[in-house]
Amino acid sequence: MNQKGCVVWITGLSGSGKSTLACALSRELHSRGHLTYVLDGDNLRHGLNRDLSFKAEDRAENIRRVGEVAKLFADAGLICIASLISPYRSDRSACRNLLPKSSFIEVFLNAPIEVCEARDPKGLYKLARAGKIKGFTGIDDPYEPPSDCEIVIQCKIGDCPSPKSMADQVVSYLEVNGFLHE
Ligand SMILES: Nc1ncnc2c1ncn2[C@@H]1O[C@H](COP(=O)(O)OS(=O)(=O)O)[C@@H](OP(=O)(O)O)[C@H]1O
Ligand SMILES: Nc1ncnc2c1ncn2[C@@H]1O[C@H](COP(=O)(O)OP(=O)(O)O)[C@@H](O)[C@H]1O
Image (cartoon, rainbow, N blue to C red; front, side):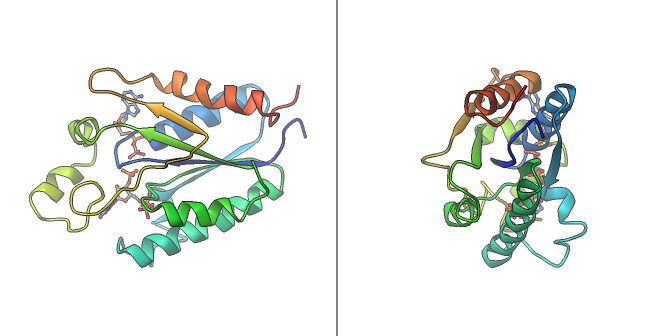
């Protein structure tokens, strides 16, 4: 294969653009002839993880399962893109430890809550502010930002990189670090 298997793990608040980045990255890599698979937290919660809630233990189990599945894809040589809020450092670190050194690439989509809340494509922030959803990340549940991740994508109020430009930032990292071969 013209690539080295790895896991690109995208973490960030709801609405920060994780799925958008996962999709743009997957498209970009496909167009260059690479094989990828996207594991999206929100989608997996309708199938593999439909028995899990949003309490801390269930979020940990959600992330553990996705980490194990991502490892299988990486073992098979794919570039596996996992996009989950994954709010706890300890859960992300446990996934990192499942993989060979340097094959877990943590991407922090650092969009302030103001940006995510203004987007609110599913209306969940509105419901959380109204107290109709309890334990919503960033409102009344924690989000622990990474302290030592491989890539930070910075998004400011009124100034977010385009999906293509976010994807290009990750592709450059993969190129420089020997995950993509000609
Ligand atoms: N309480 C609460 N907190 C956070 N998010 C909530 C909650 N309830 C529902 N949702 C929706 O679930 C999506 C996040 O699922 P994840 O599997 O990525 O979450 S986690 O990693 O287990 O924390 C998340 O999707 P994204 O917006 O794509 O991140 C939300 O749409
Ligand atoms: N870089 C970006 N610039 C502008 N809008 C964006 C960007 N990334 C995502 N969005 C928009 O923000 C909303 C949330 O994006 P999404 O990818 O669903 O986030 P998440 O998966 O983190 O919840 C969507 O409406 C999406 O079109």
